[in-house]
Length: 312
Ligand SMILES: [Zn+2]
Image (tube, rainbow, N blue to C red; front, side, top):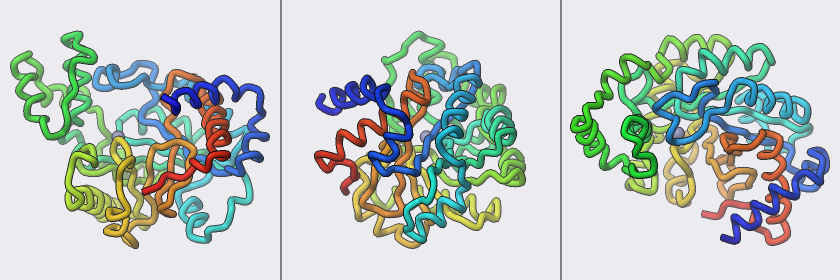
């Protein structure tokens, strides 16, 4: 409640500040905006979950970012965190979760044109369209049966979604075959050749707070190792599926030294775990400039009460 109240104030108040003022007041020179997909037509498997950024909206976001920050690569980001030096200039690094095919057909060409590096986080069980994320299954069913809001499964009852689908005459195998929602290994190879970087996003995108700590560690390490081996990566990065909210120190101790960086989705925030970086979700129904400025003002409001660090 209080959080929403402050977020609303932040949203309304942000227009009174310039981006330069906000950066200087908060001393936050590095930001990590994150997306899933960019498309003028939101695919059925996503339509009932969130709104995709259109190409025009995405390009506007990028122009705002480029006006205020320098794009940096994953390697530069890793380096900044290793040296623990404060960023010399204003920087941003873009990331995308879920490994969708639009990354190679729509996103990568736009980024190449503007010379912006990015990291794509992939679920190893979905790569090459082997399986469908259970939330995507929900979106497909919701679309077909106008059941939006009625479906709320967890990965554990995926079998129930599959059974419901059979009852309703939906065939996810067919959907996968016909729509190919995910990147293929070939797509990933050419993205890497084009200079983009790849990270893991778990094996099958479970809610981490629903699974045991051993399973969390296995989902994390095994998905990263799989991609590192398959694509000969020289770095190890991971973004938490859904959220890293509630992930305790014990988890981070278990993966200590095994990964270069991990990424959460808490917005513009610090984290008590130095190698866990928080990103700004960009798929809200607002312009990129509004999302980022209100994140800064929200950060500024919380600075006075010392609430800008994710505690674990
Ligand atoms: Zn995800």
